[in-house]
Length: 229
Image: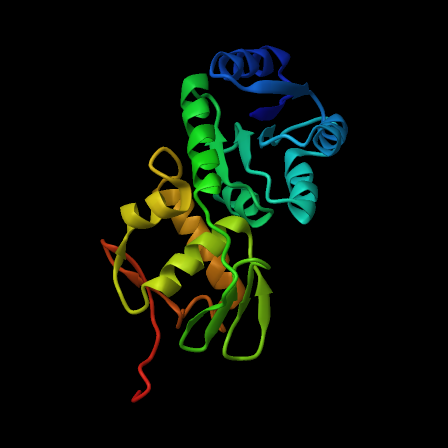
């Protein structure tokens, strides 16, 4: 299993690399955005641990470029805790988001959780349908009943796919986190931001959602009207 570790803090990058190697990973190191992009193209890593604040092109841009070509799992590292950065990180396709400072062993656990989730995701050839929604898991394209098609990130795809498997049911916050990120990844704030991003793509009015309903204090549900409605 090969990991690309990207951080301009060389001491931290070495600590992360050492911890990953002890866990059996082969590690490639990069300390700026351009080198990270070249290393990813040349090395075909199984997972990328990517700092946001990099010299040259930043981690968000590296993430965006990778996601345009591949579903390689990406964990973003940042000292920022602002909500807009979490939203943007998820929007450009990150699979997980870890705020510094953190325990390297916790990072390894998150990396393994992401890799387990990817390995357990079986290919889906058939379209998923629920009410006026149609989701092509291979293309990660969701068609809504207004005739529009929306391209989703891997996390958005996992979330809407699970909601569509359970229409008109209340899914708890913990259940959704466990499905989207696995037991060692994600949190309530990340789920809230992911819901926000998905609504901004598919809802006619994200402020008054018609598809993804919030059940106060419990979780979320996909609202699919019955044929008699």
